[in-house]
Length: 248
Image (cartoon, rainbow, N blue to C red; front, side, top):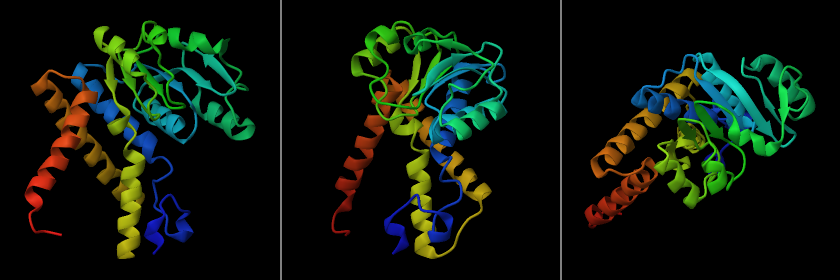
């Protein structure tokens, strides 16, 4: 019965790795996509909008992989440091003050100036509808990783495509959380719980396999990753319906 709700505390049948799972999924799909386009994460410049569970976890993993966090925006402010943020200090500020504005070693910008930051990877991990057409025309990143749900407006998505900016869509990019929620259900159902390393290993494989499948589909149909993602989903549903027959 505990499996009917996921994201629970550990002592109530929750899963290790769940809190950081969405951000980890953003990192894993971003790492795979970066390899595909020849972008070395060592020295890559990252800008993150939203420093909740998703944004902060993704930033932590990218920095651990050698990337430099050069810009952060949350509800309290917009900060930039071309030499890179000290993530330990930034995390301490976030925990203490509930926002990034109190971080000292960075330049303060207006919220709109965030979209002009010179970076390689942009991670919108806050609200939906953040990337509008005007903002899409200003983005300097080579790749956008949609950590939030629906952060890019459809018209802006077209602009990014025309400008050659790779977008890893939310449907796959932020699916790490729901994947580990499924793992939580499986563990509750079997009353057998995995270690965090086992969970991360399984999550990474699922995310990498999914992105590779979608990437190959996009190449085959000369489409965006977003279109390929929906095409793969529809294909699986249609195949299941066609082959179901008398099976329950």
